[in-house]
Image (cartoon, rainbow over all chains, first blue to last red; front, top):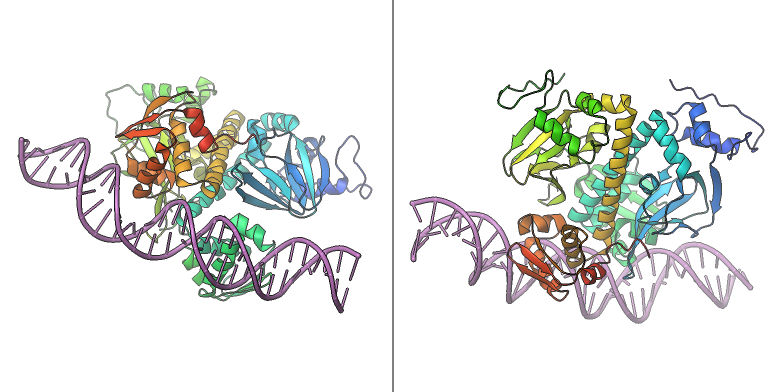
Length: 248
Length: 248
DNA sequence: GCATCAACTTGACCACTGTCAAATAATTTG
DNA sequence: CAAATTATTTGACAGTGGTCAAGTTGATGC
């Protein structure tokens, strides 16, 4: 049922009557979300799509804005930040190439709960909201894929809520580090993909506290050197932060 | 594979070839989720459904179990609790009559991230997972409704994450109280629908801290007397906890 | 009414995280 | 390469929320 009939047209030219360059369309077809969609459906859905480039620290949209388009990260990194007038700000999520974001806001047509900032120079694809909602309504396959994707994402948030309520800063940092190890076992060295202040916001603490949390993790066999982090015993670290303990 | 052979107690009438009593089917039809579904579709979907009664504090399922059915609260209250071996436990969500739960787990077929406990004597409807997933796959209308419902729910969780990261215990309690006032303005008296220990777990603090948080809110015009809470100035309380500040 | 038990409150104290300030890398710019 | 920025670490201290141990209050049963 899935056949990717990739028609390679002239390099980096636009397809007839299509808002996307051929290479971007191809990139879309490789995304976990859309790769299960027939090529012609994908082409249809992206007719009104457009691609924008954002510089590092450039704001893509603001909390409170009404969404105009579903976004997909083609390249770079995007942070979703929540703000409270008090002065507080936190990174709710970090997105990398291939990830879709703000689906819930686009579908409900409610104001954004978060702002989006390019953490690196990034290329973002936009699927206009009106059109996308129509596509979802009319294309059962798309609606089903979105549901599956959102269910997965939903569970990530439930984990997040549990972790915030039940775990310490050091444990949450350990969880974050384990997320970078890609299910390896034994020992490993990972490279932090962000600055430590960004990681601090993601973990939900101040940079100073992150430094100290790294200090605590030294006892768990975690050694930091700049952006390189050596983890001596992954299973031990996993036990320390009770990862994957859904199986009680 | 899973055969729900309900013992047939023939007091209230069952529809022919249907697992549900007529009154329960009618109740389903009134739910926000399913009321947009044609009656015949609803009847179809609920053919294999069954209803169970749980006593107060009875566990409906455990964190880590593999989901067998989508659940809907017909009557009573259900709490979803997350646990960590450490000893920590928290209430992630409280559900009342008319709310569906664990849709994400059923759709992804992954182990529960939370346990469900009846906070009161409750009647719970179960839609067997295999059948439900098939229905979602085959019925575009159902898939679309689920997507809309999940998007809404998703945004609640995003709010929750933001609140946990950015707000104090007293502010989160204020948010909880405002959630009970049903968008009224001016002043009002609400009745706490749960014991204070349950509310404490929901807000994400210890009962002792909840007591003190109520103390802090006294300065914001909140007076507690047993299960009755008087709020003198709703807009002031809303400002105090920065509710609805998506519009910055 | 009184005993009993559970729910709730209060106080004393402690641990964790935030804040502010200063010192020390690391990175960028001229 | 040195100056200038920006990130990160460290220390001292404060505030928030957790823990433990009494009380209180309130509900339930006899």
